Image (cartoon, rainbow, N blue to C red; front, side, top):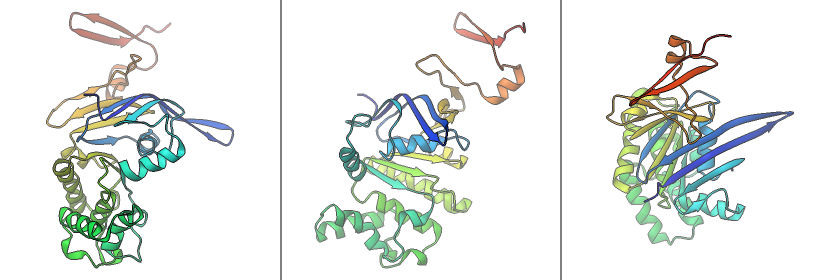
Length: 278
């Protein structure tokens, strides 16, 4: 079976005044169905750009990205709107982007179903099931300003799952939460990933996500630099399809691997060392 998400040679170039900003530089990535993946990296590394492309909110300048049966680089604008509505659930860092303040919890969750034309009975059934799934069955009539930050993110998760999308995208979902509440939200994501079979992609600075993610992918300078698999004590440097790799900064600094370097193979090992200065 092919991976659920497959990106090959993704480039994204933004025009800022008279300058071109390269956010993604030939990024390669695969994600399996039902996997919970955390994407981490410094500001400006390209992780949010990647999330926007996965969600159909932006299109790459070059390369190819396929999510399920959808080749996002070939969809029309109308098809992208349908993809966003039916295939993707979004959770943003700021609660104001997730919830309408003048609607109750139930009304917020049912709104996407109403817009999709679901019957009142089906909306009530789905809403009750989602409230139970996120642990807020007793908050159905509350408004967002009557909820804690963690409860608001739980409601936002229910809203994102209202139409049963196979892909859930979360942009810094714990950024405005305290440590304990953030841990509870991350555990909720893992539970939903397992119980509902949803593929979850979280973009975050919060390294606590490594405790629940199946895989942690680090992005630097618009490319995947390393990956760590849940339960594995090692973090692996990623070599892309063009043979490029990004060494961790600690190794570069320790061995002076900046600029030109020599690479040689001996048996099962590959050696890298600084090239002589000319």
